[in-house]
Amino acid sequence: MASYVYSAPTKKRKQATFTEDELEVMVTEVTERKQVIFPAFSETITRRLKDTAWREVTAAVNRVSRAGRMYRETRHRRCIQLIQARHCMGNR
Image: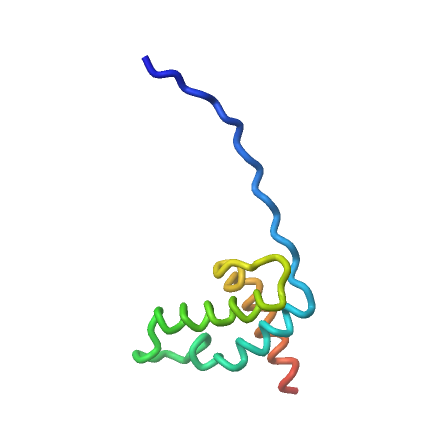
């Protein structure tokens, strides 16, 4: 008979808040790639191109970050909304 060892569930670690430097780099990088990341309907912009663009943004953010951001975290919807809001404010 096999014996099973119970291990208590681990708590999910809260991610660090984005710093001002990270946000500035993110806004700059997303602005450079906005035609790929936020395109109008297009058959030429594929999911793979968008993923590649987001991975490049994540790499740029990680160059200034201490937290070591993940691809999913950088692409998180709240971050996208923040980027769009800052971009709109900069265009006025």
